[in-house]
Length: 227
Picture (cartoon, rainbow, N blue to C red):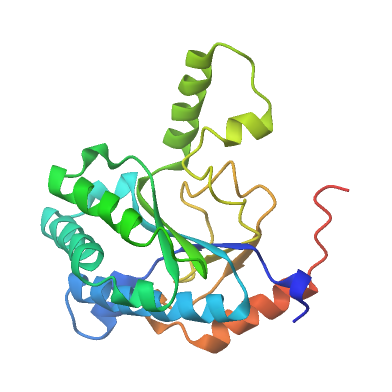
């Protein structure tokens, strides 16, 4: 693939972990564990292809509506990974940034999220944005209220600086697994010119050839951005 055809930023809507577990006779949280292991693989595949930024939709503002036992496991999984299992991020040169409203998390969770960002801040191979308690509409409303506080009118560039993703370029590619074909409140402002790819496989079933296929098709698309 030509260097200038490699997407600078890829957004991933992680979907299908629970259905993967059910299909294999497991419990929902076993699917989330499998999804975590797959995330590490996908990061390496994209990094090796030359992608510099990834934004992974890990937990939405709507996911709080799931069964309490499942939400509790997810919180423990995220905290465990970011507190005790960051060797893979350091080895692979992954810088972690948290995207979303973290105020709803426990104080220990908030501390873990901050420490993960600090611990990986010097990594420079690829930046991973983990969208936690993230909702696109809530993000835009938050930015609007921030703009009102500033008191001056803002253009698109200045408005983008008020978003959670201020340190990321807009995604060139958005991938959603599990066969669902919608964005589900993921990066509505940032995704306006993103190329959409919907994969039928559940997220833990993803293979390197699936990612390679997306990148190859992206390289063939003519991105005019309205021109």
